[in-house]
Length: 103
Image (cartoon, rainbow, N blue to C red; front, side, top):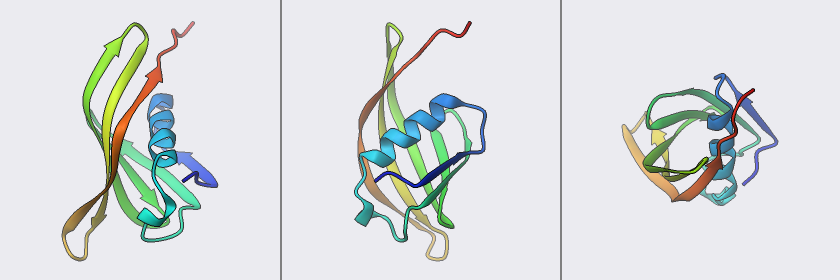
């Protein structure tokens, strides 16, 4: 699933790249709503907090492995239903990010 618009409220380009890769690996019918607008609201050491058309989702990262400027990340995507106080795993997988040296 590729959103029409991905808005990064953080200053971290790698968070945006990881989010795009996770969403591209996830089928559109896994979501409870349309996925036209995705906002990266925040992140911490092992989570990326998303707002997708007004609904709360979280990307949880596991087993981050650094191999010569390529980082392999195992991840899970969750939907949080605050009204029912429960979460649902939508997808999981492994992806990588190429780390470029900044000049």
